[in-house]
Structure formats: structure tokens, C-alpha cells
Length: 279
Image (cartoon, rainbow, N blue to C red):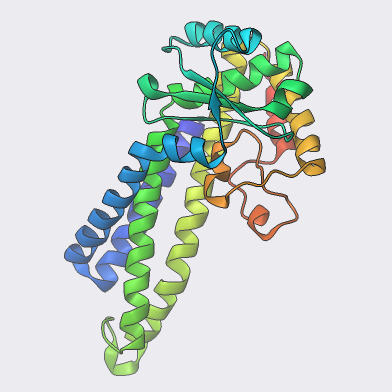
């Protein structure tokens, strides 16, 4: 169901792009905006793992440095049918984790120091399995596709805004409807694109929870881990960049913050409920 939902949401993003492009710039406008967005976002996709790991000062560890963590990742990757990813530790007491890398051969699983102190083995296995599912499901690629289409929409909306300011474009210029339509498009299209993009991210989190529960065979372990991490993240907030918030297993942004209102993650309570219903 969540896979179908992701496809429908990507279709909605594409439809929004075509609507905005057709209204403002026609086919040429769509092609230009999409090309610019594709170059920017797939460039980011190709190098994002290096950027994110450096941003959070993640350090790659060897089996000798963290034998239990390394063993967990190795065994679960084997069970998931994945190559062994690199394993990194992020300094900081806030418990969280993320996966990155452009494909299975360049994957990285990163956990914070805080998560290693907080979770027991079953819970940690649930978290690692969740991150391995993101890698298996190619969520970095899906996120990049969504970002590319959304980026093209943002670019066309910006073009529409400037066209409205200078009084050009639109379909109903005689009555001023064209300018009004451009302004409306410039305001509403980026908001709609952002909401759809966040909905795609939430769908992928549900899928990663389900896949993680099946790889580890311990849905209750993952549910318990999410509960612990959610409480701890509120008590010990993480200094995270909003542009990378969607990568973490638990939203690192405070629910009380403005960025937290536009969450890329489903409510923790719903995720826990769904995991506890897995048989």
C-alpha cells in the first residue's frame, strides 16, 4: 500500500509540474526547469553521503573498534541480501541513526554515540534493520527524484512570480486574470510540492519500519527503540540541518519548532502502533 502511495505521490508531483509548466512556460518551460533541477539534485545525490557524513562529523569504524555494532550490521546485511555497508559513529548524546549512499555498493549506516548507550541489542537490531531497508528500497534515489521534480516546480514558481511582477504571462490578460493566476501559482505550487515531498518521505518511513521489523524479526524491538529515542530526542535535542532531517530514523527537529511542524516523519505513536500489530 505504501509503495503504491509513493507512486501516486510521485505522479501527483509530476502532474503539478506539468500543470505549472503548461500554464506558464509550456513544454519548453517544463524542460528547462526540469533540466536545471535534475543537474542540481542528482549532483547532490551522487555526493550527498560524503557531505552528510562530514556535516555530522561521522567517523568510520572498524570491527575491532566496535565489535558488537559491526557484528549486528554484518549479520543483518547478510540476512537482507545486501553488501556490507560502511559503519560510522556520529558524536553526540542524542540517540538517532541514518543511512546514506547512492546505491547498495556505496552505502553507509551511521549511528550516534547516544543510541549505543540507550538501546539494548534487540532494539539496536531493529534500528539497523530499518536503515538497511532504506538502502534495499533505494530510498536515496526515490528522494532525489522527488527533490528533482519539486525543485523544478520551485523554479517555475519563481519564474511565475517574476513574470507577475513585470506583468507578463498568463492566459487571461484582458481581465487581469492572468496576473492573478500567476501569483496564485507562484504561492500555492511550492507549498503543494513541499507537502507531497514530505508525504513521500513519510511513506518511505513506514516501509522501512515494516521491512526493518521483518529483517530483524523483532518488531517489538524497533517499536521500543522508537519510543525510547523519541523521548530522549525531546530531552536532548540534536543540532540538525532541516534539509537532512528526513534521513534520520527519528525526526531530529523539535516538534515545537517551526521546522518540526512540517515533519518528514509519520507520528511516532502511529509507527509504534503499526509495528506492534505486525505478526
